[in-house]
Length: 467
Image (cartoon, rainbow, N blue to C red; front, side, top):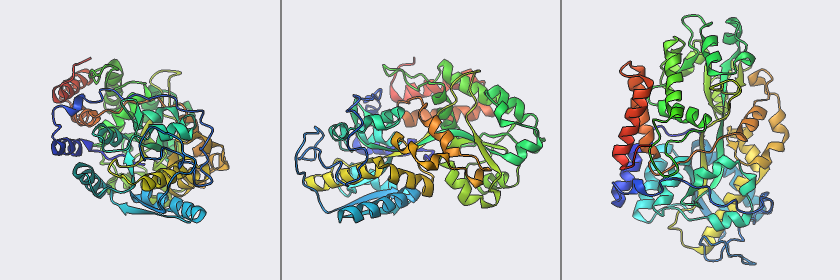
């Protein structure tokens, strides 16, 4: 699922509303994975619709077991766009099996942000459960806006069934505040005809230097790579995660000027200097047109981009392929993540039966392989549930991609993703990096200076030390 490009503004609004501006950035200086939580074997299939109901009887987080948990018959959740639609499909399946009334209210992503933030800060009006993006889990968990689900998750035994790196995105201060859902295993989508006409073989592209060299084979009016305005920080995070880097050290210091971060900025500058890039706003009409007309050859992104390409560019069917992100050095890591979401229960939901039912449905939807693969096939939402990867869909040769089995590639990438620590100050990092990478590409400063300036900005805004 795509990520919102500007979480900083709403983060500041949230803290200001709660009276935490200036101090909340210090809470949760790092995000821990928590314990390994169970054997990963029980409750993962969710097939009987009651796998999550054996949590604590008071709706709390200690995971105490009861033989017959109380469950409400109905619960309502919030989601946006394809997330909401896929959850409603899952709810229809769950309702048929259990005779329940689970429903999903579909909102636009901006509407969800406004309504959910208002509900959390006011203490009323929240849904029984909701989709929550990766970086939002930490923000809301840090202010007790979400229920601590640690005990329930560990008792369900699903920890080992989820891609390891995903657990850090739902953790704060060693506890789990959401059930992981989709992830964004990365790859480079490319136009087959453009590559072939230029004599580019994607199998020969193993490093980013290879990528740059290949891009120089293209005609002058064709770009190999887009450096999108207002989305550079998302690109930076994807690439620093590929290198195993972090925005903060384990003790909370700002690491935005680290060797990894500067290396990311440098490769972006190298692409620009090589003349293989363009700058087109992501999701704009011009962006889609550039692929349709073949003036943009490559799109480093995530598995969820598949759904967008098929929906928006149907006339390009059969002319796409995917390969893994090039490594920074020969033999280096070629896996990363971009985007993703999770399922959480607001802390203000007090009714025991409602909490139990909401968790039970979310556990069913997130840990039933058949449900997760339905969401992948119908909506392009790639599961973090590794037990889903054994299905035939992952080996299916897709006509849109010239007969390539792209889901198999993404499944391989998914299990190699490096963890990334989201903190309450992640939005500040995004904002500072976005600004300074823009300055760098405008020629105002070099990669090292840009990242040093971004790091100083984050330190000033969060009262953290520089690494």
